[in-house]
Length: 327
Image (cartoon, rainbow, N blue to C red; front, side, top):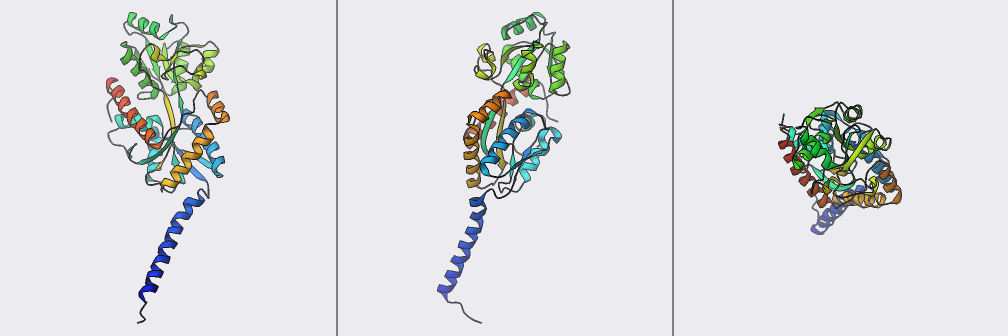
């Protein structure tokens, strides 16, 4: 048998290692070299889908590759999140987590097929949407305080519409009632459109809904807006007061962000975040979001992770107070 000299063996091993490192680094250096899939655990036309598509189109342009949105709305968003969790962590599958599947699901499902914090790499938030408190125009109230006083005077015998049990509109309304100390009869409808229509028709007296879904009805005089859920007033909604002006500390808005399967290379995550921040903090992106009643917001991966952890804890308190139980 031919003996390989030690120096030649060392050289061969070094060459092999360098070659392996080069092959491992090449995908990151050239990333992305093909289209990227963005898992959207919501149906087309939802606020998360709308905001995510705007961000995806701009991020794809910056990266030089198309980002294809893949809507997986089954089981209240759980299906899409599970698909994202199990995807190959190579940067070619990203996830735009929904509030329902991230912050609400852990409290209403006994067993989740994923951990919303541990199973994903956090990249950045890219937007927030205030929820707007609207009432039927026949209701004799023009402020949050007047709604509280009216509900108390009626002994809680007024209806709060929602998009369904456990929906963001349900929990936002429950959060307001808990914080302000008044009651209403919760009437769940099949979706946000139906719940808003019920308030317009007078079947229910008030509801919460994302700003983008309701401001046209407010401007046309078919609904009256009393306040919005961001911590302070926003130029997006003119002089509409923040509910926090009446109920200090109240903040319950929708959020949108970008994550990736656990184990996605850090260099890829950094490249995605840097380009996302660059394209979202432009006048064009801000204007697009403003038309949808949303604001551009970005943060660091650690800030995003802590934001989600905090949101899960706060949502849990509301779910418990609302009497919802895990199934």
